[in-house]
Length: 304
Image (cartoon, rainbow, N blue to C red; front, side, top):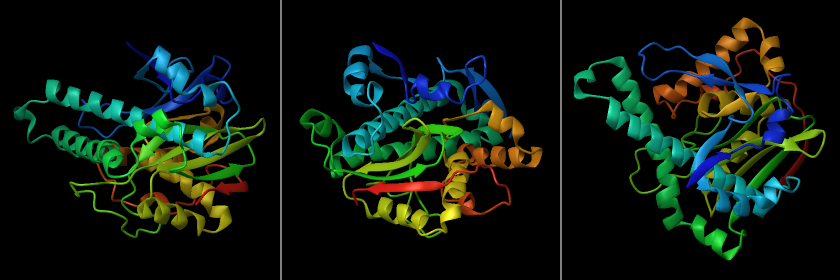
């Protein structure tokens, strides 16, 4: 029986929680045609949970990153990538179940129906990577069985503080951060995905870890477009990208409450792109004039 697995450790979320052990996350209702995003609090016991694994496999499989300090290495990068892929697949299955159960043909002309279709398509194409990619490239289950993580590629950016924003997610990069096309999302054969994990690293630092499995020029080009940005722009661009492309992020109430109202509105507007089904848009790379975070890259590790 599948349990409520944590994509992000409770001990990590505790570092950015308030006095009641709660963090902020974004929320919107797809049952309404209105574009409204709310920021809600969720306890760290519930934050980032999904029913992806049984207790035995969850404990055994992720023991290296649950019971030991996070390392920037092939094994840990693979486990974070695998967890992010499974979480994305879980969300896709839930979305499609809700779609088939709750949406009727009578809603065909409604804005809600349009958003549901676009969102379902976005998740479907993003998750197709997990199914087809494992056949066309490295099979994730085979990697686990063999214990050979050498097919995992990673790029880790070490930042100078515990990040106020955390995630363990998977995205399908259609364009790079300068707007250059990387892949055709309508391709019925294969789409490349990359996982993004923003987590504590050591006792006083954080890490932004990108990882994927198998050779992928798409992922490499996506990463290189980020790394060629001015150093001071890299972290800011990644934060904008998280709010633009990632559904499941958690952030510090203290950090969020200190942001100006216009900055909060800008980040919330980015979040709506996920539900509008616009993965081809690259507004995440555009500087909107707000300094959301003060992260500085102090280290870099990769096996590319």
